Image (cartoon, rainbow, N blue to C red; front, side, top):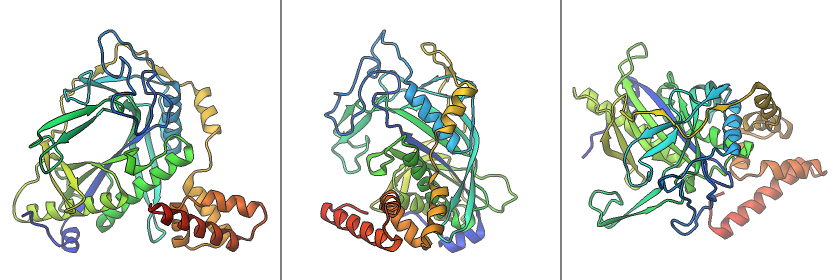
Length: 383
């Protein structure tokens, strides 16, 4: 049984450092490098072309809308946009990658050096610095049948669906998040929720975590004090709800603290999150510089983002969610909890439009929240 240190004791004894890698699927009509449609829930292997299947001789073509969406995201995150960038081949073998490489970006991301101010539950703001945002394509989906874990080990056989292969992604990587202390789990979840709201406001993704539109890899390490070197980190892969992100960070802090306190050392590895047990399990060892043998994608020209095009995109950005919430909170006289409830329900837009049409603020809020709650209950979905 995994030993855990009491959480309060763990954060008093060690300084947590976190990092997040958030993948967002872009809501384009077609895939990143071919004309296959992007349709959620389609029968397996029906949304494919020779390009997304990696068949010999099939050549990719960049989806311009995906590039524009990536620039939108970069600007909304306060990033610099690269004048030129290029795609690279990330070489590895796994059944859900039919080409035996993933087309991604390595040392030339489309956006870099940004940051966002994340609002926490008590109204305080925490700054999260962003290292880069880069474009890539998604992999297919493996389904391991048989066995007790749903993973490849112990499965009787595996099925592969390539509908998702080639779907455009943007991956957003933070710099090490320092100084969060005991609030590190809350900061991690609030940051991903902040990004989710931005994606929706920009219109670049449905950002439905239950569908895997937004997935987070959560890095956690501990060090004895804030002025000590960074510790060895673990990476918990594909955590797909805010609550799970918070729980996964908390669990890893407790687990690593118990190991270090007993004189052990942390193995740098990927880990899997288990919602049913509320814990993580070991995945595979991971080095700081995995040898993916990146090299420039020879079948694609560099991407050029002219200053004029970038400024045109910037001019079309909507009011960002945090700015809008602050404005509406003041105009409506709402509490932080009330604003969170209205935001989660997707009610801000309808309420704002109803007020603009002449309704009283209190009446508009009451009617829309009641109606949305009724519909959610009838459909047995969370509000």
